[in-house]
Image 1 (cartoon, rainbow, N blue to C red):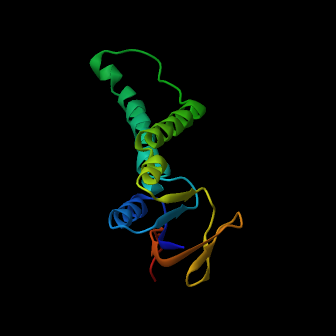
Image 2 (cartoon, helix red, strand yellow):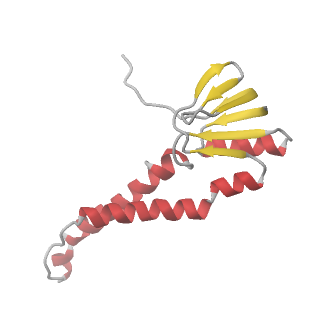
Length: 148
């Protein structure tokens, strides 16, 4: 049985798990998909790659103002998305979250799919594994919604 199970492998979950270990707790971290959270996988990082490409295309419109003549470039969506995925992969390689957590003594369950509570001290993972803990720390992010 773990002292704490942290659900969510984004920045908040990683910090919570590491801090709990620093304080001597027996900790597991459960992440349904890829470690790193929204910013690394779906938000900030991929958006910056696509925004850079958009700025480059925009800048081409100014070429003639500076005496630069040439055809307007075409966008290769496959190559652009490959570059985006390459950037995300490099971030994962650089951060090495799973190995850092494991070196600190945190048991990591990544790519497990949805975790669900079975009782106040037990969660079940999609692969049939059940984990027990005295306490849980939920770091699962949020969802925007329009208020009435």
